[in-house]
Length: 158
Image (cartoon, rainbow, N blue to C red; front, side):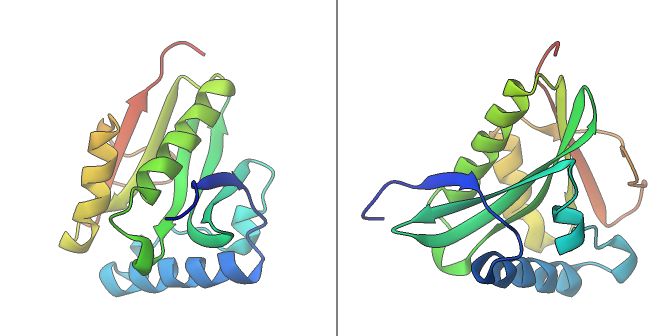
């Protein structure tokens, strides 16, 4: 990247975010049964409990992610996706760190996420583990099933 990565709030309904979110949904639908695709649609990403961010370099959107408040002490990472051309460049890790910083600013005690168990999700699980997330029981609307892996990171008292 010739310039630094800039991560900031984005409107999920813009052309570039929609393109990445469509890739995200297509990936989830290819690798998980329909009842276990938990990706948020645009309306879900526009909910007041959700903060949607994009990572850009040279003005080009390379990845997206969101932080959803579950309650005053617990947030969830949602809609993480890096454009195929930008993978392996640290975009996903930078977004996760940005969302964790946001969670700390908002004084959440814990941040959790759900991802798939399919081998295609292995890079995501490794990324989250590198950032300190550990496996946990299902939370929020998730269930114990062979298609979902739930992970959490304790941030400490809010």
